[in-house]
Image (cartoon, rainbow, N blue to C red; front, side):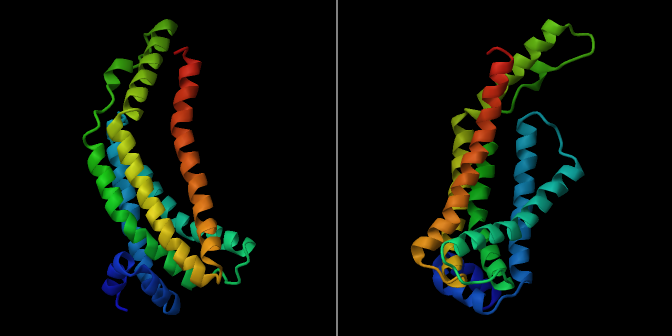
Length: 226
């Protein structure tokens, strides 16, 4: 299959397409796919930073977000491969698997774009309400911090923000489903084992991500007596 055929095939006939990718890996193709997704993550981070009152992200922050996605690709491939081995898999960590997992990122484009569009409608935090200056007293600083926590709670509990996150996670699960097909054929495991190998780490990641977001909010509420 040609590149465009493979891209379309991930949406229309993923099983056949992934088998073709495993037979004939071309590293530059998934690298482009993952790279574009990394740019989408960077843009999403820029939008979120503006909504949270963080101002413009630095060039270093933007580059780090891209690097994290690119590094996460081989790490994610390694994690699901190790899980598959524990479940009786006989495959190897090779370019074929790396290529196949990289291609699964393509289906996350649409959910990511939808998520970014939704974020535009989430009211930004009112940073003016919790500005801290050197002349403020300890009590005034505490009041500003409490206001910051209140603004963060308003932002994170906004139904549109929650919807944007749900859409993004649905994209991740869609990608994981395709990843399970790659694991099934690349690591020679049963369908059930491939689903377990991919979805257990994914669910752990989602729980950890949500927990860190709302856990930090709960912690700050406790610290500032809210």
